Image (cartoon, rainbow, N blue to C red; front, side):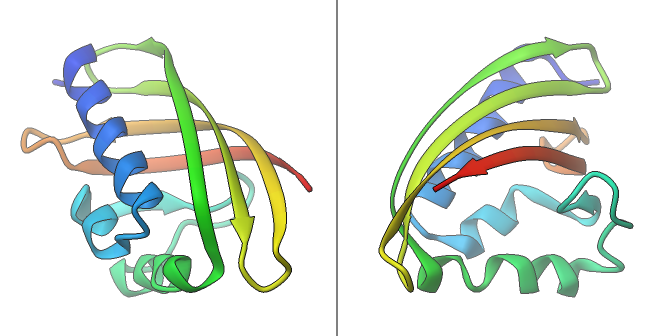
Length: 123
């Protein structure tokens, strides 16, 4: 049973570690058995190693991250977060603007047990 403050704390930790390109710290915000959807219509990651594979490239492929977020709705089991980000993709040196939605659930330890995201990216 999570509170708005717990969802806010989780989102800050998740986004700030992403901004710092500290993908290992980002992974610490997730439960090892997280149901993780990189894209909403895909099947979730099969295991935590697949989640690691999504994140271990972050420090190499992006930089100069600026983000903001707002909790849109929540209850004790689910939170909907609207987030925005700008970043530079290192291989192309192109700026991306992203507007996304996270749907998350947290366990008693404050780790994410369910993450599904929808996002729109503009270069």
